[in-house]
Amino acid sequence: MLLWDLPTPAAVLDTAVLQANVRRMAERAEALGVSLRPHVKTHKCVEIAVMQRQAGARGLSTSTLREAAVFADYGFDDLTLAIPIAPSRAAGAEALSERVTLRLVADSDEALDALEHRQFPLRVWLKVDCGYHRAGVDPRRPEAKALATRMARSRRLIFEGLLTHAGHSYWAKDRTELERIAEQERAALVELAESLRRDGVEVPALSLGSTPTMSAVRSLQGVNEIRPGNYVFHDATQWKLGACALEDCALTVLATVISAPPGADHSVIDAGALALSKDLGPVHLGHQSMGELLHPDGGGRVVSVTQEHGIINRRLKVGTKVRILVNHSCLTAAEHDHYAVVNGEQVEGRWKVWRQRD
Image (cartoon, rainbow, N blue to C red; front, top):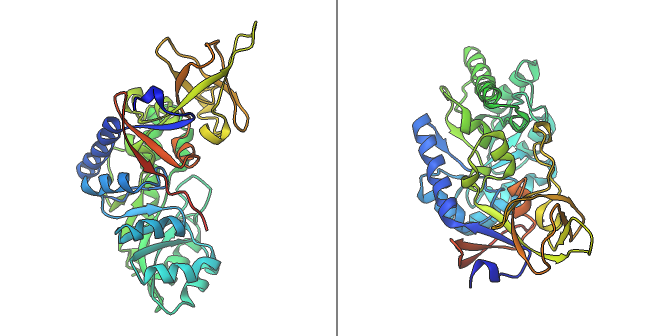
């Protein structure tokens, strides 16, 4: 089958670009002297995880226990659940920890209380806020040292170290700011670790990373591993941020024009929020699009979406198929059941997206 013969909407994955992205980040990690533990929430795909492991990745990061269990079922035995664990999930984490090496994340006494009440010793990272202000302890507050000390001295827990994520890198305005945030991410962990070590608290490892910061960081001195995820696909946001080139974007959505009302200057496609997501992209950079058209006859953009419809700002003949570069490939991937894997315009396979949730 050819790409243009696919039923729509379809998540189209260019394997040549994917392979180049996987190889490039593996080489980046090696050059920076750190281990690569990619975040698979972006792709949720076993075939891509295998590709990452073959390129040198050491373990995986996931966003849910269910996600971790899927990859455990396929032979991945070193996993990090990279968001703070809900206390009610402690029993499930314990069960999975009996099968594989599972590393958990916590930033509260409540979570540690739940983990310490399990019979099986659980591995845990302290989540540190490096400036994103979403989750994690402020490294300058006394709670940071108190929680790290509690983890390190617990008889029921295995302290893995400090972990952070510079999600605010997605709001950078230019390359200089990306570099500043990347250094802020590194320094927040290194400085807290050094302070803890001076107090006699052993800090085994430091883990960080986002795709934008890993594209810009100059030094990761003191850090042990990175956890970028979006780099396998990239998207319009990464492109606009300067974290990648347009030709590095591996995931697009194929859609069909289903309406072009007479006298109108727009067309309607069969890809809406449930195919593209409703992520607005980097609006702080003047981006005003729900997706960029990559069309043989010139560009255009998706200007609005409803559940199953998208509006594009150009008139095209009904039946025309267009490829759309999405704003946020992680969210888009999670809307689809599988990828149509292509080499050029030839469809070569169909890879499952494991998006089940408990």
